[in-house]
Image (cartoon, rainbow, N blue to C red; front, side, top):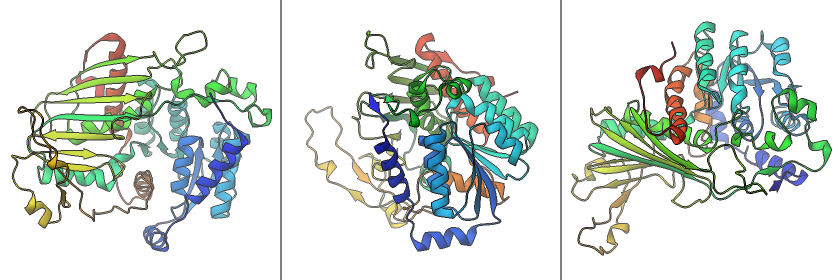
Length: 455
């Protein structure tokens, strides 16, 4: 197991601080479009919370009123120090989010929640009820009922609720969906999709040996954790998180439906807990180490059937990174938040893409892969890979990938735009994840329209 040490604390702080360097041009552009200063709070500043914080610190006209995290000696201390360093602001620290609501709800414009999944629903509902707009990380909850409560709370309160499926605000993803798949129909008839997120073996994080870096046991118990190890590795515990298929897969399964313009109608899935073991040989985690699943769509935006295969593996990083591919009879769009992985592939018998290159819709092609020799007469010739155009509306290479989604939310709070992923649409996407998780043990399952809608 990997122990969390003081060195980890210092290294994380240094990296986070170093990542806050921005060009003058980007800072000026951000400031020019900023509206009134918004008063905000952060609840949960662990791994994902730090990612959000590092983007928020790059955004102008935000006043950090409060930071809440039960790990006062590390997460909370780190976040408050970072905010002070880069903004000169001194947000108040809290362990209990309800105390934060009592003290500051009336002045807050928004709160950003990045706690473990099982706290998302009660925290979000309480902030919405108190009249605060909410940005909440995905998954919405560790249970479907928790997610439903969030949708209902948003409706009742009339406040904004954005869920952290950040690809829906990414200009590259929007361009791929609207311009390439729909406008140019670059893939032709899309009949299949493929996605993956594979990660190398990683042992559970071990609690720090020094007591001063630990959360007191009474605080852990009060907030639903058995011990410090469970707190640090909550994603693997039933009742707290949902395992890799929720933690990683939710982002990409969401993109299948969004790109195809359809809800899945059936799902089959398989998983296992055969790799990570306790000393007595029992599975170390409640959730599956690896999951593979197939979603069926009866009617995409093209009016056709399609299948989508997805895998999330935590025992190998093989397979070329994390991506979602959309495969048609004219070509394939291989999409990723990492631009280096993103590619377009033209089928050899498809119409020429030169007009698209000349019009600046796509970039040039690399024919080197197409020179691969064919070993079997039944083998199709290798395809030429094409890039995205150099300029995509709204895309800035140096921006962190979460920043677009945060900007979308802040803009909506200011009344400048609509949310990219409100709770109603997020629930649709996450219903598919919950069903896939269930299908691992229950066998192939069929969706009904009621699965995607909160009554």
